[in-house]
Structures are given as structure tokens and as C-alpha cells.
Length: 245
Image 1 (cartoon, helix red, strand yellow):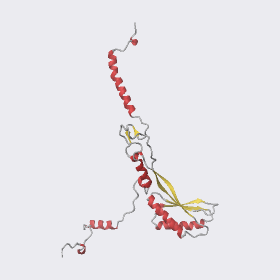
Image 2 (tube, helix red, strand yellow):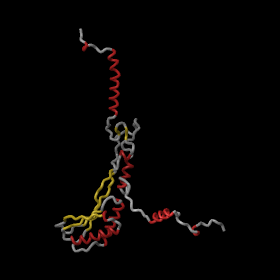
Image 3 (cartoon, one colour):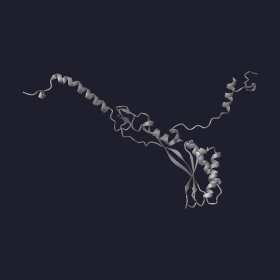
Image 4 (cartoon, one colour):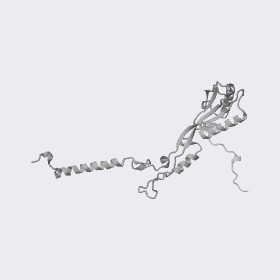
């Protein structure tokens, strides 16, 4: 005679456990579907279709430096040095759009310290005359004791775009049952765009705006307050003669 614990499960018990096992199997299949695949572009059953997401362009900052040599006993910059500095600042405006500051590094304690100070004064005047604000220029000193003729360095941080690397042909383009983009899809466009962009800072956000011209706006607002027409007044000479001779 066997005990109750050793008895075989009845048909009623099997019918009760059947739906529970089915629910457990469905839950296991659903959890396995959320697993991240080996392909980084296919995550949790979906794929990065946008090429800018599949192959992003990385933007970083690197220093760009202009060297100015100043000898001992000099009293400022030469004409050639002035022209080279203006070219450097023009390139700064074209590629940076005012997103970083100009840093002028001056040698201290060297034999050409007096000549360097004369040159820095002229550099500040040139930058101010070119439209640079005082808060956009920073002058710093560095220890150059023991050096013969240490240079003046004018530098700023410029944005550099790093295009993605292409050439991933690991999948069979002739067989794609899920109809998903292949790994190299859109990479060439992103690579060429990153290599040709004039100002990589544009990939991060809009450029800074200059001050508005308020002369005409003030006149229009003054007329509007007085209840006068805000449009330009036309004369008889401005009218077009449409009559035939």
C-alpha cells in the first residue's frame, strides 16, 4: 500500500497544471525576445534605421595655435606678422563662429620680455579693431626663463569632425528575411558629410547671433506709437507710368 505522497498525479491535477505551464512558456519566450543581439545596430527587436544614428559623426575640440616670434629689443610686430595674425583670426571666425575664446600666451622672464609686451599691446589693439570683444580675449603669461627667444602663442579651441569608419560588409545583401538595413547602409554619406563640413560646430547646435540693427526698427516703432503709417512713404516720382503714348 502506497502513501498519498507517492501517488501518481490525477487527471484533474494535470488539467490544472497545464495552463500554468503554458503561461510560463509564453513568458519565457517574451523575455528571450528582449535580449540584445550581437549586432549593435539591432537592439531589442528593432534597428537603427537613421544613418545619423547608425553612423554618428563625432565632434571634438582641438587647439589651434599661431606662433609669433619676437626678438629682444624689438618694438612690436612686423608688417608680415600683422598680416599673418589677421589671416589667423579670419580663419578663427570662419571655423569657430565665436564658440571659444582667443588665448594670448606671453613669455615671462626671458630676454625678449620687453619686446613681447610691446607686441602683446599691438595684438590687443588689432583684435579690438577687428571687432573682438574684451571678454573674448584672454592674456596669460608662462614661465620662459632660460629660453633665448620664446614665442607668443595665440590659440583657440577649434571644433573637429571625425567621420565614421565604413566598410562593414559582414552580412549577405542578397538574403535579408527581416528587410532591415545592412550595417554599412548610409555610412558613406555620413563620412563624406563629416569630411566636407566647413564648421563642425554646426553639428552641435546653431551659431551665435550678432547684435541686431535697430535703426529702422526704432523708426517703425515710433510711428506705430503715434498712430502713423509704418510703411515707407512713396512720392509721385516713385509711381510707375502705365499710360501709353
